[in-house]
Length: 147
Image (tube, rainbow, N blue to C red; front, side, top):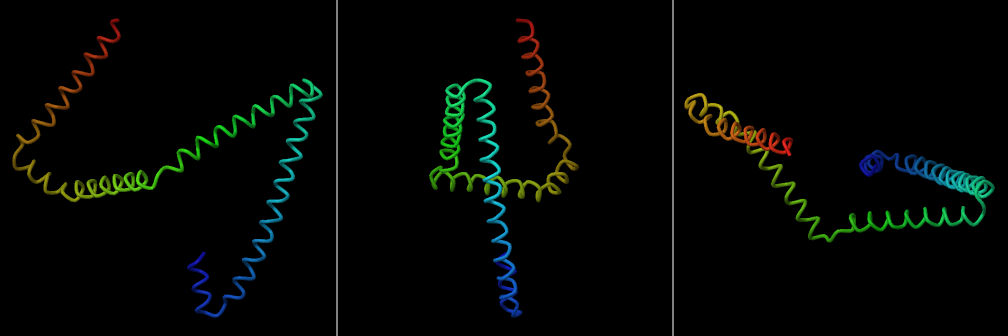
């Protein structure tokens, strides 16, 4: 959206673009008010229906518990999202390192394939390790199933 605004400023159509943005903003505000009102009326109707069915006190307690559970969930979400910047930076660095490592591995694939084509014995170690791991997992599964 910012790129469009900059383009419109250079072409001289910025006022038209800003007028469209104002109109869209006004429509979104009206839609939000109507949506919140509709949600409020639906919650009120649900409360009234449940109050007639189960009683006013029981329905109030139920709505209060649902609100407390919602607050607890939001608190947990805020704790997860509001991690310290140092942790976010550490996670970002790990993602970058993983990305660089994968690019390096993929870029070296032709060299690795050429080495394997020349020396077939290079395949023995990975194949042997994969076979050992598969045998270990099979024996472990057999042992766990036997208990």
